[in-house]
Amino acid sequence: MKNPSAIIIGSDHAAFPLKERIEQELVRLGFQVEDVGTHGTASCDYPTFGQAVARRVASGEFDRGILLCGTGLGMSMVANRFPGVRAALCSEPLSAALSRRHNDANVLVMGGRMIGEAMALEIVQVWLRTNFEGDRHQRRIGMFDRVPPAAE
Ligand code: RB5
Image 1 (cartoon, rainbow, N blue to C red):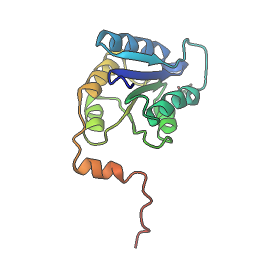
Image 2: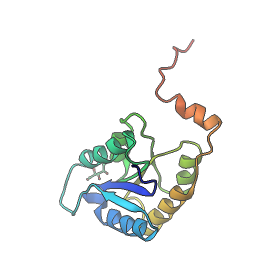
Image 3: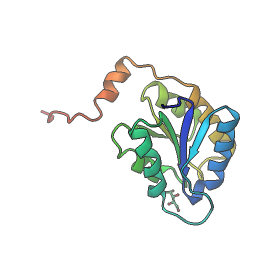
Image 4: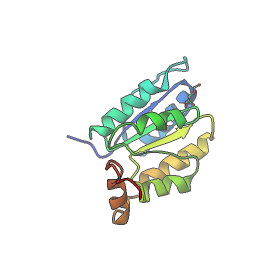
């Protein structure tokens, strides 16, 4: 059975120290954390870990995931290829809150070389405590996977 307080997390080498710090904070906050790696600072390929997280959010096994790489760009590109995944690259708390309120983001992405640890931890906390507003935003995210009619 799915644990609503479980979070799956992954990073490449560029954000490995930040992943470890975020994981520590998530455990402190009472979350159960599934860490798919990477598990050290040796150079590795971010798509491996991005896919490992996104696949398990897309399948419904996890409601929420966190992905980190140097810029966050590669991880968000990978994660958003998975139907049902709405990955949001955030570098400040307002985007993190709005990604939940308006976009029902289910994967938070950050760039470990772009933001400091304190900012990343604040973003994580805001992202986790902010709820989706539904209503017109539900209609809009429902449109993501529908092929639009050709423009006039
Ligand atoms: C690794 O050097 C770097 O390319 C990666 O962490 C990420 O920033 C890719 O988008």
